[in-house]
Image (cartoon, rainbow, N blue to C red; front, top):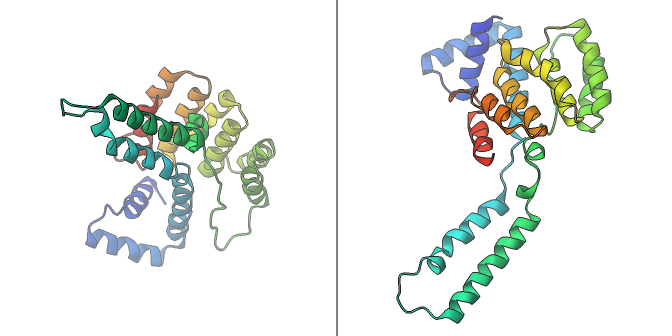
Length: 240
């Protein structure tokens, strides 16, 4: 495995390969167990991180409601009955108020964009890492301080484990310790792992937790258009 293999995995999962390149890469997967393991591990993590921003059907319904009632606010007719206009406005306002009240969209941005789940990476042919297994259970059970302890044990043995380092940073974030999260997340961003731009995104979240929107913006702007989480970063930029 080398840096070029990481790029190939990213392109393979993104569907950004020519048929010939894809076939050649799949031949290597059949011949190289380490490459197959890395692919499965990154696919699991990608799926988990995607779940951090789930679609909000209530928000979509709000947008449809506003769109369908645009004629109420932009009527071109010169003869508009004030009473009917007032009733229409009141109806739309009531729908908007209800949707805003019950929708998860109202929740704090740091909660909306938080990592929701940690998955145990597939490791074929090796003994399971007990500390990492414990960390997964602790993180998903929201016992973040315990997860930090378990992930620290993993990193003491394997300081180059980008997965453990990323999730220790996320555990610090979820434990409301953004300043402690940043050293791990910055190492991820400065490295060459597949999690590089996840590091940048969660660096932004760490500053958002401290209400520092300018630093949050600066880190979001570090995420390039071809990154897996670019659309998510742009959405958060628009929310700030």
